[in-house]
Image (tube, rainbow, N blue to C red; front, side, top):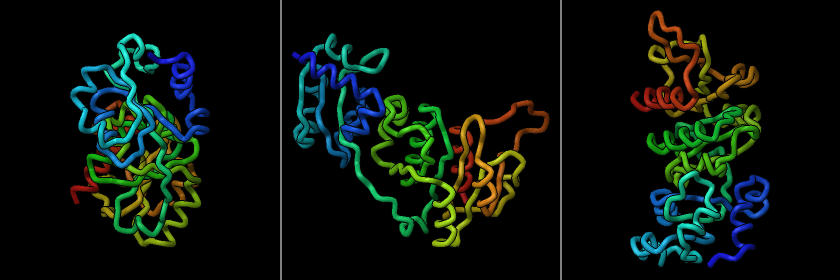
Length: 253
């Protein structure tokens, strides 16, 4: 049975300041937690109903995590989902270092103030699908450990490195270190499908509401746009959709 203090602690991890202070984050759901157990991320504790524990005994044995059997009622008390799903895990936030020298032969994503956790999770999942292992974010981009972001990644978060830094200095340093294109996704840029840009490169994607900052646009070497169909009245594309289209085209080349 979960103590009141344990429940209070687990629920407190829904707040970013607590996650940062404790160096922890939460993962919920059968598939995401199974992905977590199979990753290199250190796991703090797992709270699961008996049927899930029975199905994942081998993974749990190798994880070294504290295992706490719970009832569905207890799961509801600690869950951050509208409909709790068998298992709730707490993991340690990995401490990785952004090494500019390792990025020269890769397609790298940079996100400028992307604020929606669902979009962020989708982009991480897109990166995983297309073999992108590094995403660099502005400080105001939503935290990768936001529970809604974690949920939206469906386990891809455990295979993609996400870093936060001031983007403009990073872009300038990237250009000095590598001769790769720095590609800004903007309205009114060159047609994506006619552009000569290909991977390896640094792809800059802007926020849902404001797009890329002027400084980043000016720092880019190429400006591209996804052409709309003739007569289309759509104002713009969702940043996740736009990222998927551009990355798919860059990977195709």
